[in-house]
Image (cartoon, rainbow, N blue to C red; front, side, top):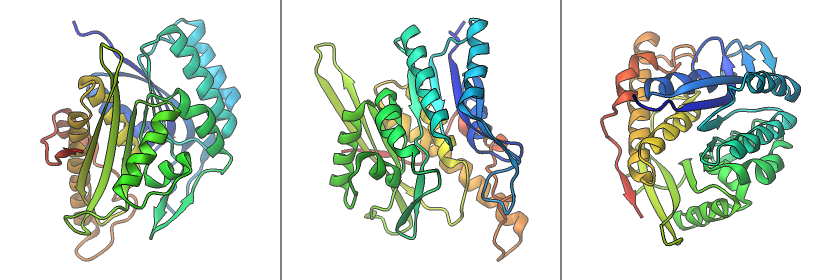
Length: 312
């Protein structure tokens, strides 16, 4: 019998749609992981809609939930996965929990998607309070093993701008020096040799050889852009990267190819369904653009590789 692998996922939750824990739990379960989900926020729907209602969990409430797990001696995890958080005390409490879990399991892997902001039309802006940035820099990233920032978030964390692939690699080295052995810049505005219809992602993984030396593998992926605004793609990416790096340790190329190819299939299915529902020539609504996750189960389980990663 295959050994059980448990993930503690601390992310946002929506009643309707696929973001945060809703975007992470299903693919992780499909890929064989047991998931315990703690909600950083609980909203009716994601904030891409015109209206939303709900609650934001504070650090005391997080501590109470974790304490319940601890009292029953079921706080045993192989992975911690975190995403969108709005409160700096909540984020600091996450770090305390990760540190405690790492003390009882030295092999625990912490996968952090440092959700802070993004670029629109070349201009970056934060969509969480600015006081979260120093917490991510000083407390979160140093205890993380895998981080999945977009270009804007990588620039915020490193304090350096990215205008070229060389600068992106240098930024990933800065982030490695802060703690994580695996850094994936999930999207960038770097130009692709294949044209403006492609998006570039970059990855870097440090592994230690038996003699103690460190080997770094760097990769580049070029993905077809989809002309639509999806919500939850970063959450899905981080969850699948967790799964595929678990199944292919020390092979970032294969893990990223499977992650990005599965993403491609999910997004293509989503946009096709959304356009069919919206009608010819009409722009799909946020509700129509919710990720077609359940319908993509087979692609998540066993993705046909349609995006190749180039080793740099």
